[in-house]
Length: 226
Image: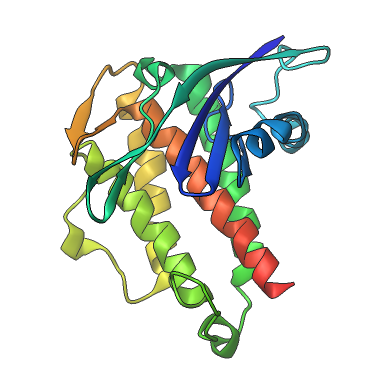
């Protein structure tokens, strides 16, 4: 088995190495090498998470090799917007196996997130966190939900923004996840591509970014609580 890697500097001092065979599975580091050094661990973790699920497959077995297939350098299209990667791999239409994987990993990610935050008190949710861009855990959770809507909006497929239940973070999460799972089958096989703020988007990129984004912020919340 050969795993193909796409690596990019998503932000200053924030490198991500994506494993294309599993959209959203990734390794992060402050440097390019740190991100690459974590790829094997990310693969092993994903194999463990998928074991026994519908997305578990005998093709993802040891021994395996790793190849850097693509590398992307982010850039600014405006003072406040960094254009992130649109890999050649992002152009590949999603197929039915991707749908099985997506449904599985979205459910695993959401359970993990809710296990962490659903029983937190308002005091903990609203407690300011020094240096945190979102300010507190409540706004990190809200950011996860609004970002999922934003990814669909990049493809011009989101529902109207005013219909987002932004005042209730758990209803927001539930609304967006139901929308995602209901609408993913409709973009299977689609070669749709859009460009917003000089950044290109496709169904595969939507899946890659949405899976990555929820998990990385769940792990961030776990670190804050620890």
